[in-house]
Image 1 (tube, rainbow, N blue to C red):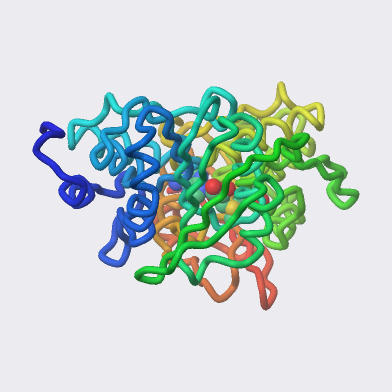
Image 2 (image 1 turned 45 degrees about the vertical axis):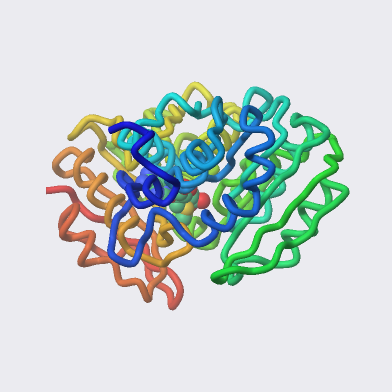
Length: 378
Ligand SMILES: C[S@@+](CC[C@H](N)C(=O)[O-])C[C@H]1O[C@@H](n2cnc3c(N)ncnc32)[C@H](O)[C@@H]1O
């Protein structure tokens, strides 16, 4: 398919979310994407060769800028691997694959950038890391257009941007979205990654802005860490599925010196954090950290134990599709008789989904808030 056949609306209409979860109430393009492209239209047209996109969900901003302003050499960073893969397949579908490059968050991505489009992340720490990186590396004339759904915006986001930029203002809202415009970068010493020593865990936790739970200990994770000693002692290979900062992987590796531990997550910030957490605790040679989507890089029947604190959000939407995808992944990579240990909010009642995807499931612990289950692979 050739890009010249499309205007912006035509490109956006062709975008798909896959390999991310697809469902009738989940969309590949939202009103924020369209508002961002409109608000930044003049800046994009004036500087189409110095465009950077952060947090594009499925490619609407990158491909929209390519078509609307003829932008070329767009540099794009997406924390989620599924978003990166969706952008790549969408770009191929509309014939725009040569208009952008995916890069890690850092100097190569941002050096000399003069127009930066941002889909605002939900977490302030992630926004803070983005803002700091832009201020450190972009051109001093850079203008940042950061948009989000009004229900997810808070004045704290303005405050975070104001730490790295001297001017921040909000545009008028449209279709329940709004854009914050920042300029005048103020470079500062790097605040990320965060590092915290947890006396409770006896571990140092390292966290980039996007990593779930920051450098602290999530209470669900705590419930699972507390029973790791009861997991099968004869396991030889373990997978921390959706590892975040890698607390479960590090706790397991330390508990079981014979165990080969793999930690995977689709978030770039998470895998960077997990690798740094492993290194900070002298476990770098014990834990193999891989960025992939639902353990897609692991062979079938290759793991004896999976530990997982599954996601229950798909972007901003609460949707069980993400957790189901993780359970199916565990069912695939576990050897017959291997076990998946999962923690979830008790009200979510995931047991039937685990039975379907993995196998017979028993409750290990249950409180009003959290349930830990063990499922035996068929
Ligand atoms: C609730 S957090 C748990 C993080 C960490 N294990 C902990 O307990 O602190 C769920 C994690 O799953 C990851 N995740 C979500 N969807 C994923 C997917 N399709 N493949 C791999 N990881 C995924 C998220 O990035 C997030 O880090």
